[in-house]
Length: 251
Image 1 (tube, rainbow, N blue to C red):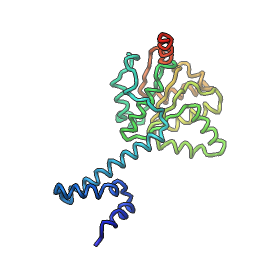
Image 2: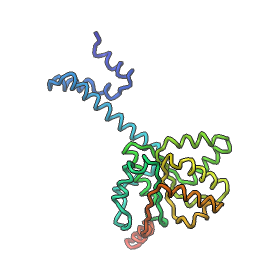
Image 3: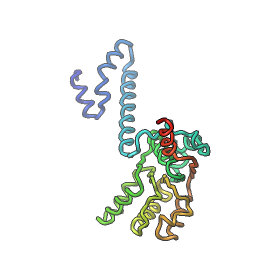
């Protein structure tokens, strides 16, 4: 017959840390309140599952590299009247586009909140069970270049497959070099109809020949991205400019 000293060891061996912390406290509650063994065990399991979900969410938020504080609640939708808030909230759920390997393309001039919206949607996706990676496009391309030089490009691209949504911020700031743009095109082709991309860009499609060295490559990239895409256009005054003007007024 096992005693109370053995149970924590068994729970640790089974990797049930929350149950290991709460079994005694909940056991006392069960005894005082007359719980059945089934009620006591299910309550312990509920706590373990809930805590496991919290830890999983925390890990995924950390690995996503999302900028802090960029949430739907903190975004000033009233400053961008043409942006459909209901549509943005729906994108955060992911059901209608992540599962279909669709894309989200966010356009607008500098400072209107493209990165904020992208990060906020990304955070909502994680809450809803998806894996997300947020990165500046130039930084990711530098990593892909290094992988290509070390002959590890295929495995590096394969590692990106674990993310349901890859957020490429500041897409328009890619250096117009044959190496970078060819890698960017390869990344787009790799995820086409398989995994989702979210892109923020301050240049409209007709100016993408300023990003890609080859006009045909630019057309092909646009074709793949737009084929299954939700497009958001943010037309508003720069947040940063408005804040700067507000500070001047308050001086």
